[in-house]
Image (cartoon, rainbow, N blue to C red; front, side, top):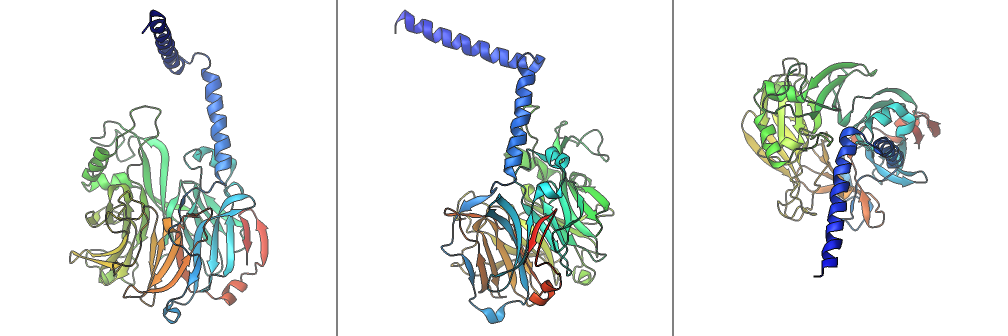
Length: 457
């Protein structure tokens, strides 16, 4: 190598070192062009967020070579209409839409959800860029056509049958909405402003060294949108000596070292489910009003008293990145265990399962799949519903598939979302409601535009 070559290398290295040093100074002492760069970043985030509302969000490789409905055993279907939540490509871009379909997959009614029409720009700006692709994840349909929806990590809105906005609540609401006996709703929420502690732990959570986290919350909301109860999930874990689950998670998930880094989503709750009075006697360890909570990142499900914060039962080993624990009677809690094994098809662990646990007898059963030839896997998302006739309605989110099976695990009804360029949009939730076409017709919305977007039949 010639002396001239060494001179060139030395020059490049010196220039790189000076650039690095000056970059550090810009950040630390706000030298030029600090303000310009900050403004550019803010503008880029604003543009990204405004575009992001209409981006697809979660698209996955097409797994099934079909779309629409199949009816292997139509005579065994649970009667009613199915509310399906996903994103569809429209003339305005990809939009969250809830479609109420019949057994043949025909749309009886739909709500097109426009975040910019439901929430103020101040609310949306506050959530961006951490909520750039708001999916509707969590919903509840009233008999009169009113609809509660969670726009992921933004808030909850109650819409009329025709799409008009009744009220909104911007508490970072996400994932789930469950109705209680007193007609209030339990909703998952989050504070995405990094915090090291809470009112219960003002000096920070013991053992975490002042590290700041997003704080997941369990919220009780009235039917008119009043926040009645606000419980910090980390408080519940620490009060019940369950913080070792946090330690396990942090050991396997490197915590951001930079003060500017996005804080760790350490708990990531994805469901809150109340125990109804009608079946409380079937659960010796629990009482009516106790709540089942799924903490995805900790692979943890627990049941606690929302008044005393006492955790009465918890389990981790049967589940992996689970969703949607439901009280189903006779002491059983059914859980959608994703069994995320980082493969595309679940080939390492065999796919997702609907796993039932019976806390007072320490019993575990896999209720679906019931045979090796039943493909069923979603690494994220996933819901399930116990139907009145004993069937189960399963939402295979990343596959864009909804499946109804009988008590033996045999398929009864199937709906698969249409692919787009060999990919499918996540189906966030499917729920069967005891509704008929006549019920929907009584809502009186043939076609109506409103702040909530568009509601159509």
